[in-house]
Length: 394
Image (cartoon, rainbow, N blue to C red; front, top):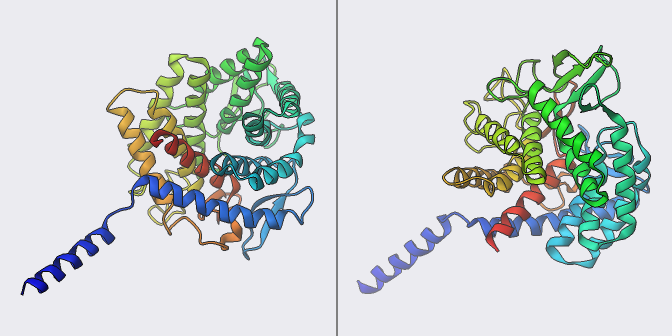
């Protein structure tokens, strides 16, 4: 009888331990180890494709690559740098250096606002981790190229060139490229960069945001008067809807601007955007947003893992900028997002998913482009969020 009771007790303990949720530190380490496996495989593929960078998969599951002038070119090298930072494995440094070198010519590109994504995620992380002075020179040249798109009478860096009846379109995504320029300010001492970043942030805060702290995607300005001419969307469901990735680009951007300037208005704004997102009635239980918070087919609408990853990374940093109970709330939401993204629902299996890490992101559903596929920037911000959370635990 006693033996039976002992056996039952052991079984209950084993079952209980099996049902116990994994701790977040274990999930982080497992996800980073998995990311290393996937991106080692991805690098083996990309070594055979000179001058190209991975982008996504097509509808048949085949790898889609991009040249260095595509806006996402910096994310794969940036992810490799992050994995080198985590692992200290020289093979990731060598892979990161090789992929980063493919983007160098974009330092002279004045035709895009995305040089922060392209250069700072790649060369910026490389400089931070290696102190390679040649990387510094590339970045400073790129920063000079980027500010040629600034319109003083508008107070913003122009995003796209004129199209679709927009004279000077500025998209909320552009907040993400200001971190690059704030770096240039600190390194060069040239206050021009600081003024441009503050003016762009203030103008965007004034014109892109609605009373509920959701954001329009595109605001176009009259190039002569500097006045707003249109407020619309390109990638969202409707002009008045809350396109998910646009909302989290803005959140991340204002968190960065508070970090870099210490200006309270940017923290206040970031908190309000965070509260809009967290409290939105259409935020799913697993905290991975639908591609648009106002998509008409919710709850069957596509999810956007990239929006979840970007939001998690921003919330982890924001949690260190605010007092309790907000700090714990933001970190708790980010933990839920990381747990979700690390689950089989979103994270691929080794060697599958074209060697990308995350599944189920949406590039542009209205344009029928990159719908329900892996994306390099989803992977990049997932790895970044994992490292940021891990830094809090260490």
